[in-house]
Amino acid sequence: QGRPSGLVRREDHLRREGPVRSLMLVTRDMPLAAVGRRAMARPAARRFDPLMCCDESGRYAGLVRIERIVDALASSVGE
Image (cartoon, rainbow, N blue to C red; front, side, top):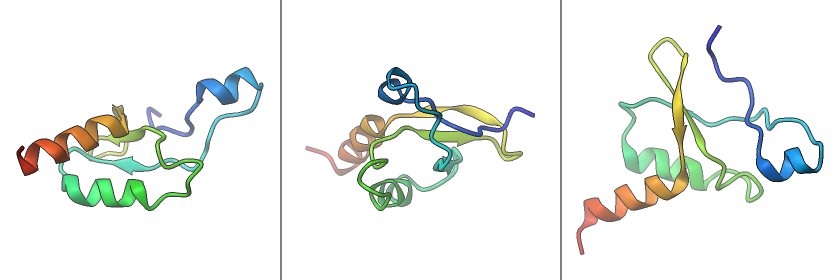
């Protein structure tokens, strides 16, 4: 149905483990600071997993890497 159900991380795949089922879903219209805070509040083992971006219907729209969140937040503060 086009909705994300899991994330296969490289290290898990190499160990022949299944996908991560506890996903953090975000939408394009969520405030960046709130997304960053939620991502950093995740358990340490999953804190830097990519976020699943979904459209308003809950369908997969792409992955958002934490590095992109940090970069965008840093850019919004200025140098």
